[in-house]
Image (tube, rainbow, N blue to C red; front, side):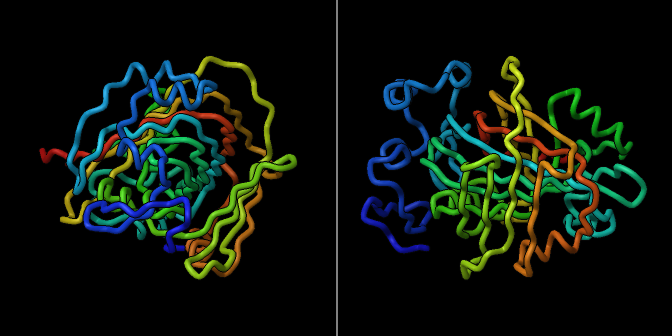
Length: 304
């Protein structure tokens, strides 16, 4: 998977040799392309939201510009109930002192599994899988469903990212070095033929790990809304950091029907992790065929 292809060129990123798309956005602009270039290359994309956001130059082990823009993307999310004891085991002590897994009912928390296809973004295009534990806001008591409803009403959700594999080396290095995220390189296949949006996720040996397939739900017309997804994690010096992504949902629909989302597990490493959580009832399925996002670089959490 690391072999350079004919349409790629090698660049140095934080001391790593990284293949990037030759002539792609990242090769030309290093996460800071002018919106005029995006408008010329993709006149079909509405850039009005991005015009309201000012990028800042940052050094995060390499020079970048925050936030990173994701202009056209698709995703499916499955939120399941999971064993609370296991979820607590998976969150580092330093993190759980700040945010705690939300207890939706006694003994059960929530885990969110999201598969993303970034069609066109500052670092070109790639697939990503996120496995996250839904948590309280920092230093807030766990009031169960009321904590979750409070976050939802504020359009600002919190979580701890357990796993975040990607299928390009550029996304892996940027995520690990610049964002303190648990990324590694795997193969992921994205398919939208038929009635479902489907992601096939493989292990590092390219053996099938699991398949996540969500029904293409009917989309109701609505004004695009922005939801903030916050994450707390530890940097390489074991310091707490806070990062977030603002997500502008252009087309989105949700369901609570088990038949609308299918998760096929194997004995692969990610499947084994999910099995260890004793996934239960589907809490919610989100189908998002079109969204935009702005990912901000993490900052150190201020000690009180």
